[in-house]
Amino acid sequence: MKYTTIIDIAKELGMSKSTVSRALSGDAHNVKPETMKLICETAKRMGYQRNEMAVNLRHRTTRNIGIIIPEIVTSFFMNYIQQAQKELRKHGYRTIITVSNEDPEQEAENLQMLEQCRVEGILMSVCHKDKNALLYNKVVRHGIPIVFFDRRVEGMDASVVCIDDNLMAFFMVERLIRSGCRKIVHLTGPEHIGNCHDRYRGYREALEKFSIPYDQRYVIEGGLSAEEGSAAMEEFLSQGLEFDGLFGFTETSTLGAKSLLQKKHYRIPEDVSLCCISGTTLCKLVHPMVTAVEQPVNEMATLSCQLLLNQIADPNAARECVVLRGNIEERESTLAVKGVL
Image 1 (cartoon, helix red, strand yellow):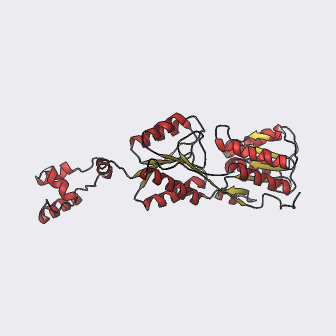
Image 2 (tube, helix red, strand yellow):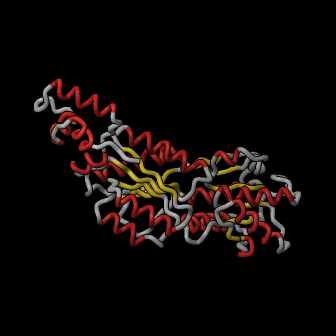
Image 3 (cartoon, rainbow, N blue to C red):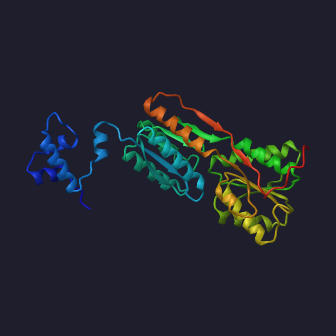
């Protein structure tokens, strides 16, 4: 597809490129009204569209913000993007959205592409806690601030907005225990995601509080997808261990485990109470609906945008770690809390 340029319009009218350029930029001081009208009408007829990126680059700004997310399966990241776009538009910024598909190589390509597009800042949820750390630092050194959200990266000169994964995991497992569960499976996330360690630590601390012995056999890696969660649950069941509760790292793997359990005629919550962190609409579209910690996605998006805009306005602005409180949504997949133990 060939785009109409200022040169094309100048040739069409037999005028200089500078005259056409001045007219299209509204320079009424240097272009006669009748000439400006003719040029504008011709530009419209020829389908001319102003190259905003080129104009912005001349002014050393693009007014573009990059957003990198790891997946689009759950609604969390889509909701984040919607709120971030709404917030950034208030300040005259547009967004370029990329998806890494939980692949560090694809994430690196997305970062390099955004840098080449000269975005003024990046909002990012990483797919690996350290594999692209050198690249993150390089982008920041080149003057493009990054604000991480949802998933943390250690040792970065960057702001981050997330929930207290350790505390929310502790509260969730504590609720399972208070409802009568004693043999609780923890379906962990992949080791390369930092939140995995915080949520595992919360699981361990809740067991310790109630003097329930820790048993490594009840901790299985469930991955991130429903398929991985189902496979992990199948492997656990093959051990023949008794269990009455399941705490999942994330929604999709937990739903995969839930589906397998129901196929094998486990009743939820009568036989197994089941809950997770990072719940979204998906947790409410199954039966029984799943108890989950939901992240305050709109607040997370608004705060991360504000932090990024502050750093664009002032590169020396303080980097902040903002830790939000998740919301526990009690649903039918868990038994009612019986009381203080």
